[in-house]
Length: 278
Image 1 (tube, rainbow, N blue to C red):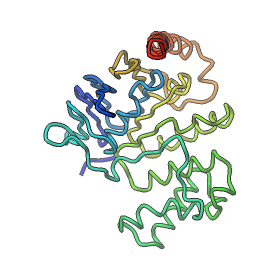
Image 2 (cartoon, helix red, strand yellow):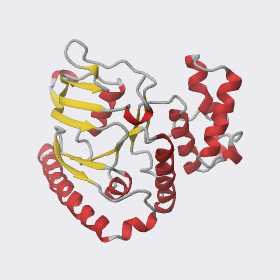
Image 3 (cartoon, rainbow, N blue to C red):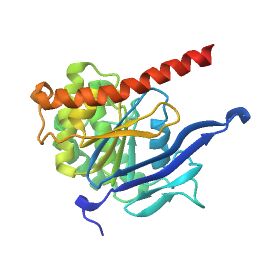
Image 4 (cartoon, rainbow, N blue to C red):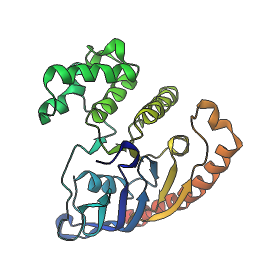
């Protein structure tokens, strides 16, 4: 069995996705390729509606692909003869909008997956859930309900709920988008602490360029629709990273590089939208 340090390598090879709503072909992703190493924090940035989430959904097994292939640790998830990946606990998703069950405590929410999958008995699952919540700084609220804790605590619990399944890849779709700057900063440091413990591969979609550079090992800039890889920026800032990292000269230079690439695509997306409205 692969160890935690060498599991979770994603290969996205020449992936194309064409939707056909009402008989009109819409190309969301066009011949997109990326290589994400095991244990890497991979940040995906690009204009709204460019196809980032379509790519994530294909990895998760929510959407099929039209052409190309996606592999996890060298094994085919989807591709020729298998357009849609099977959904599985080795690829866990946290979306922008919260998905905790409001009638369950945080510990019950976290324990739910292993119990339903019958990989753990109820008592063991709840014990592990409480232990993992405590590691995430939530030890005092394990028996609280989602409506009784802050949005930041709920979001941390969602990530713990994904990690209790011991996934190879954690798929995050703008999980902190609605948070204020201070809460988001705290959540960033919390996620990096979690990453330091687990070394799980992270595929993270965001519009926040500071977030992308602060968290990422690499930032993949994608084009306006259809989604293609435009540029990959390697973030060589050493870990552990703290709030002060964002005021460094190295961080500023990386911000300029990523911002220039994204800005070009944002202008194209805006102009395309104007043409469509016209």
